[in-house]
Amino acid sequence: MQKIDAQSPEAQSADLKAENIAKLKALFPELITEGPNGVAINQDVLKQLVGDATVTDADEKYGLNWHGKRTARQLALTPSTGTLLPCPNESVDWDTTQNLMIEGDNLEVLKLLQKSYAGKVKLIYIDPPYNTGQDFVYPDNFQDNIKNYLEITGQSVAGIKTSTNNENSGRYHTDWLNMIYPRLVLARSLLSPDGAIFISIDDHEIHHLRSMVSEVFGEENFSATAIWEKADSPRNSARQFSEDHDYILIFSKDPGWTPDRLPRTEAANAIYSNPDNDPRGEWLPGDPYANKPYSKGKYTISGPTGRSFSPPPGRFWRISEEKLRELDADGRIWWGPKGDARPSIKRYLTEVADLTPRTLWKKEDVGSNRTSKNELRSLFPESESFDTPKPIRLIERVLQLATSPKSGDIVLDFFAGSGTTGHATLSLNSADDGNRRFILVQLPEPIVSGAFENIAEITKERLRRAGTKIKAESSMFSGDTGFRTFKLDTSNIRAWNPTPEDLTADLLAHQEHVIEGRSESDILYELLLKLGLDLCVPIEHQQIAGKTVYSIGGGVLLACLAEQITRDQVEELAQGMVAWHKGQAPASDSTCVFRDSAFADDIAKTNLAAILNQAGIKNVRSL
Image (tube, rainbow, N blue to C red):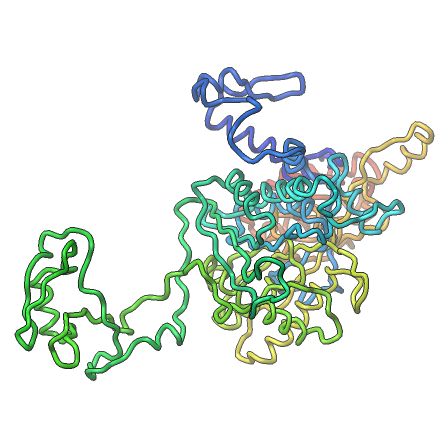
């Protein structure tokens, strides 16, 4: 039985460096060599494979560069030492929901989600701080970011002062770039091959952000920059120009990605009419001419009154003369009310597709800042904590462009704020009977005044109230309006950090690898994360030999975290677990986990592992 300690792969988040090396090795095995610290890349071989001129370490090279970029990249590749603790009491429909609300530093959370959700997120929408000089910031810590997070958020004895990213700091752009860069690197690996990321931003950092996202996602994966008309009216107090819009940068994981069409609106349909009472219904006159040369597109045709028509100079008929006469005979050509106008090809409302998305998003279609404030005020009449929340219809448009209603698509927002993305997902699901899922991540950023202590509390409460409102207004909708809450914290597995002053006490404390005060549920969900299972996967439990045994994901993971297992209980416990495992018949290899300190001696531990191994359960671990 192999023991899991703080250094074991099963106790750590995904090692992105190791994964990158494995990908390179699969493509070019000859690149891999051994260096002073283990596996290394042979740069000379790399130059031979791709050509000397394509490999450079020169100081002057094209791209966005800033102080701290190298450290920011390393920070993204450093595994997390934390876990996510389940909070059923702060959740809604814990047992059935597929949605997640995670409270914590999004950098660490993104690392922890890698094993379970890499390549599975269909859409990422984020509304990061715009770097206006009033944004809440804190420094990421390369050595121990979990400890750093707990201190900053007041969950540790020590405290680190938070501040705004003031323009006078001398590192105004640098601090913002160092914050956003590692998060984008981690976000990309979570996107599915057919996924896309939408990022809201304003003029302060759009030029830097576009360059950075091009580097992380690839220039070829740039899709569009949408312009959102956020203002209802001009700001007459503006010193130079009234800023009426924000931007949404859109990048995909793969250059072949295309957005979905938008549903037709009443305004789009209103331009269709039926002046000749065509039995096929309302139609719109289409341009009969084309700019592209067409061999059958040069001819003269006569209308009902005998008037002749030819294409203007430099243009051509869109269809051949034969086809035009065929359509005319079928009543599909319009010659004007008197029959003497140039011919137009009828485009029927019943035959047109949904709308091609445009890059200008008007407030009438997706809402404005005032819209979003009113939406939030209707849910929180007691609080005014957000100046610039996003309107629900804006995020619904993003969802319509990048997700499908019935595919269980996962939507991730790791700057969740007031929770608009979660609210919009629930709202759109109720409108089109969809089953989209959301994962929200929000730092418990303190609020100076108001009814809530921090922003994460507002996020959770909005989801509760939004779900209740949607159920009340959509009685026919039986979909998921709940969410599971998790909170970032240190790992349940005790790390070996001895102090020379009291080594004996450290040795005694380390006999129990699980941190004191952590529940079986805490440990189970860390196992889910570290083994790469969905945090919403079903968990069953049975009593076997007087012990509680858990089965996760239909038997993919079996766990007994009892604090004591004696020799005479081993046989009954092991055989019961084997029988349950056979009944579930999981599709993949299973892992069994026990508490190491529970066994009376090594004989009990060895016997239990042997019985499980004989039954085909080879991955037996202890904590």
